[in-house]
Amino acid sequence: MDTILKKIFEGTATETGKGFFSALVKNLALALDVPAAWVTENVDKSRQFLVLAFWLDGKLTENWELKAEGTPCEAVLVEGRMVQVPDNIEEVFPNDPDLGPMGIESYVGVPFKDKDGHVLGHLAVFDRRPMPESEEKLAIIRIFAARAASELRRIRAEALVREREEKLSRLLNSAPDAIVELDKDLNVTLLNSAAENAFRVNAQEILGRHFSDFMSQDTFSHLRNLTQELSTGKKGSAHRWVPEILTAVCTDGSTFPAEATLSRSGNRGRISYTLILRNINDRLAAEEKIHTLSIETEHLREEIRALGNFDNIIGTSIPLMKVLNDVDQVAPTNATVLIHGETGTGKELIAWAIHEASQKRERSLVKVNCAAIPAGLMESEFFGHEKGAFTGATQKRVGRFALADGGTIFLDEVAELPADLQAKLLRVLQEGEYEPVGSSRTLKVNVRVIAATNRDLQKAVDEGNFRQDLYYRLNVFPIQLPPLRERGDDVVLLSQAFVEKLTRQLGRTITPLSREDIIRLKSYPWPGNIRELQNVIERAVITARQGRLNLDRALPETAEASESPQAAEASSDDIPIQTAAQIQELERENLIRALKATDGRISGKKGAAKLLGLPPSTLNSRLKTLGLKRSL
Image (cartoon, rainbow, N blue to C red):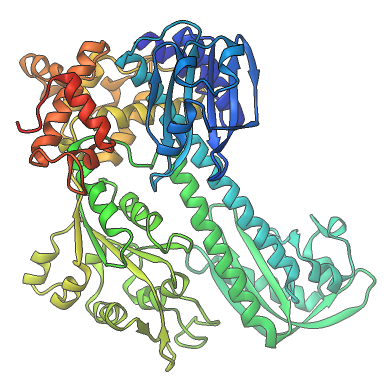
C-alpha cells in the first residue's frame, strides 16, 4: 500500500485545478493497474454529472456531461454511498450503454461531499477483469476521493472570490464619485470610471504616473502631508476626511474643486492610499458600500486560505465524531453556541462548520478576536462610531455587528471582554439592539452569536471576572473540543494532510509516514494541539533528508524522551498498518467503540450509523461481515 500511495502522491503533488484531476485519475489507474478511472462533479438535481477527467487505456478525456440514470454511478451520486460491483457488471446494470463497448467487468465508486453532506461528485475505477473486494484498495480510493473533494471545494471558493471581486469592480465603476488608488510613492495604481471622466483621461494614460501631475502644487503638498500623518499613526487601516477644498488638475489643464476622503491600508512596504473625490452629499453612502464589500471579500479570501491550509475538519475519532454530531444538531437552529477547548484545537473551524450548515450561510461570518483589540477601541470595533465621537474619529465607522447583520459573528477569546462591554453584549443577545459610539440612535441587528474560549468561564464567573447573566446567555449550547492527544489516530491523518499540502507548496517529494514516524507522533502529548502539529510537520518537511521527514529536528526532545522501547512496542499496535487484515481489525475496533457509545443502537439521530457517517443498511452489512452483534 505504501508503494501505491507514494506513486499517486508523487504524481499529483505539484498539480492544482484541472491539472490535479487529470493527474489524479491517471496515477490512480496506473497504481491500481486498472484501464480506467474518472473523477466527476454533480451538475444539478436531474441526475446528471460532469466528468472532470477520465483516463481510459492511456488516454485522457475531460469535461463532458453524462446522465447517471441506469448506471452504477447513480447510487453513488444520488444516495451518496460507495458502490462496488466485483464482476458481471452488465448483468447488474443492463441499461448502461457504455459498459459493453468498453468491455467493463467490474467497478468501484466512492462519493465525496461538501461540509453540508451534499455529494459534490465521485471517484471511480473500472476494470475489464473481476475486481474482488479489497479493503486496502478501497482505502486508497477513499483517501484520494477526499483529496478530490478538497480541491473541488477550493476551486469553488476561488470562483466565489472572483465573483465578489467582479462585484466590487462593478461597484467602483458605478460609483458617482472619482476613486483613485495610489501606491506608497503616490503613483496611480487604479481608478474608476468616474475618475476617468473627472480627469478627462483614459485609465491606461494615467496608471503609473505620479499624482502630483493631477493636483495643484498646494493641494498636492497638503495631500502628501496627510499621507505622512496616516503612515505614522496606528497600524492597519486609517482614514482622514479632508474638509478643505482640493484643486484637481485635468489632463487638458482645466481644474475642478473637490472634497475628499483619504484612507491608508496595508503594512510592511505594501502600503496603498485610496482617495475619493466626491460631492459631500454622496460621500457617506458610497464609502460605506465600498468598505463593507471589501471586508466581505477579505472574509472570502480567509476562507480560501483556510482550505489551502487543510483547515477543513480531518479525523475519524469518536471524540471528534461526537463534536460533529453536536454541530449537526445545533447548526440549523439560531441558538447561541459556546465552544470550549484548549488553544489550537480548531475552535474557529467548528464555528465555520456551524455557520456553513446554518440558515445564515448565505451571509457573512464575521470574526472578532477579543484578545487582540485594545480595550479602548473594542466598543467602536463591535458597534461602530459616529464622526467626532472621540479624538481621531474623523468619519463614521461601521462596527462588526452591523457587518454581520443577517449572518453570524464569531467572538473568539470571549473571556477577554472588559466588564463594561460585557453588559452591552448582553443587551445585543437579549434584545438585538445597540447604539454606535457617539450616537443616540438605537439600531436593530439580527445576528447569530458563536463564542469561544480556552478558559474556564464558570471559574471566571465565580471569581467575579465575568458576568453570570452573560455566561448563561452564551452557554445555551456548549461544545467541548477534545485535545489532539485524546483523538487517537487523527494525529496520523492530520499529519498526512499537512505533509501533502506542504510538499505541493514547496515542490518536494516526501515518502509516506513510516511506522517509526507514526509511533513518535502518537506518543507526543501535543500541548499546542493541531496548531503545534502543523508547525512540527512544516519543520520536518523543510528539513527533510532524502525524501524522509526529519522528526528528529522537528519534534521537541520531550517526545523522544517520553517514548521508551516498551511504550513504542505497545503503541505500535494502534498504528494504521498496510495489510487488508489489519485494516479490517481497525474497522472492527472502531465499530465496537461506536456500538458501545450508542448502547447498541444502529439507526436514528443517536445511533451508531449516524455517529460513523454510514447508512444503517451499510453498517448492518459490515457488522454481519465482521461477525459482530449489536449488543456488546
